[in-house]
Length: 385
Image (cartoon, rainbow, N blue to C red; front, top):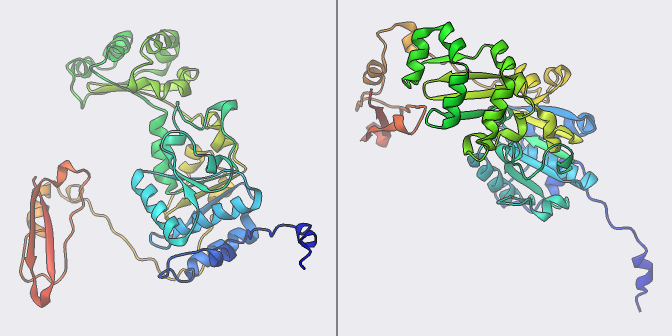
């Protein structure tokens, strides 16, 4: 007969915290093999030398598997202390991509539609969420002393996230709203003094005309600005940023154009986002760029963190890119000339051509698919100039 009392006294098995070891225990899809060399090297260095440090930057070239590295780091911290962990994405596309990879590799995760899920708060799974959900004046994570305590925050595509954080701290009021008119009139004298013609264009709603409110005028009339904005806090253009900068308006700058006015702080008040600012560990993932200095101002990182990122030291070659702006080379090289010269259909082409444009509106035009020799296909998107 089995004596169960002897077994009841044994301690429960501990969870692994080495991310490479964790990967080997995952119930991943059959087509997912071992870690890549770059992934294994970065994870080993993080686990051996960086896991006790508060901040770390992971820099790898595009396509080297940063998403899986981030998921394994968060799972490691989850296994270590059981506190809530967050995977922040720059947009919804990256959220879907991260969730897909987490599913393929067998990493437990959750998402937040309205309220923060219990499995995240209880430290049972990784929360994958957009950076906008954490950084806004009505965040479910709470502000200041009311912020949800988070063990580890990981920010993917950190450079893009900075832009989202900056946008969340701005009040942008369209010209057709009453608050815009009242603030513009409040500074009409100083704006007109800077440039009477430009100010006239602003009043005529020319979107290309803009003026900066002088900082001394802005500080002198800070009380009037606060009173004006406070009347319209129910407006979507004000309510999300108002809780963040309402007590910091004197340390903001204001730009007024014919299309809208924008109010933004000189320095982001990151201390208000306690879930980020007070997190025990923070990891920032980024593609390789030349200058990371703006991460100091944008995310409050120390210079030491910036200058000592986690990289794959055995990288031999990563490719090179050259970006040419034709109109800066010669004024005659307009968009129409470039499209006609380089995107003209030809049966003699042996490679494909891709045209990258800045918005969906710019994609309007002709789409052609032409058969090429050797069974190749060329697809061109010709942009209307």
